[in-house]
Image 1: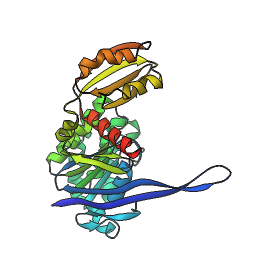
Image 2 (image 1 turned 120 degrees about the horizontal axis):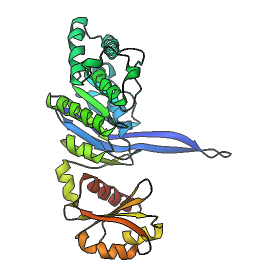
Image 3 (image 1 turned 90 degrees about the vertical axis):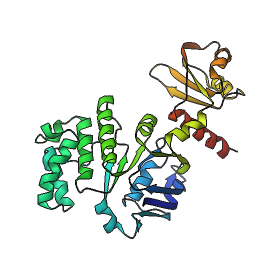
Image 4 (image 1 turned 180 degrees about the vertical axis):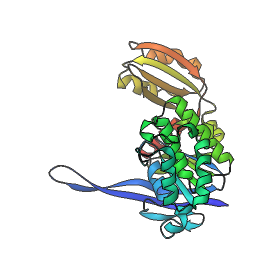
Length: 328
């Protein structure tokens, strides 16, 4: 059974530019998105900030109207059947908003149970079950203003499940969490999927999508570039090696020379605290290290590592290829 279907889904915004002569400008957040997600799947939407992930999540969860195209949840139109869809879905956004800090964790869940009209006898059973699921049983009666950020985010998950939805939308659920808190939350998400929940997960953390999702859609500038399993996407870069060069202050013209090397497929620059990490994708990359260091002559190099490509590298290549095509 297909849970989510979209056809040529578009969303545009109108804004203005200029201080004196103000001009109207149309911004395209979604540009003809087609998706089909079956029941029980853990589906990941991967993209950088501004790619359109939150926009499509808000449309599918009936929070935002599309400009054109169509979207169906459980075979119901997201515009025409809002009242029928909302009781069957849960929505969790990353961050700390959406909870009442002066209430306890238990009282927060009781409030949302009442809001979703969960029968009292079911809520009395379900709230302790959810608190145990997210590991908050021992802190259930404390005000959440004293919770850590990870604990608040786990309570968000419990809140999204209070009415036992069939479909759960998780938009950047681990953003801002420390590694231990994020790992615990990922385990909760994995357990929910194993219990039969269909999960729509957005993230810009490649390793998170790789670890959790059955299928992944890579999104860039409002478009879906490709949809496949994480393992299949990695095959895009299976014949490549990644050379990582950590250095200090490589000029833009030097980086452009590396990008222009005939063997180089993609280059990604990651800014570190005091240095930069140049990630170079190329066939037999280890054999080209001397050539790359020759191009970087005069630049202080701290470390050079050669490794096998990951899902993140596949993302960098696919997005880079799309950018090259769009520039003609």
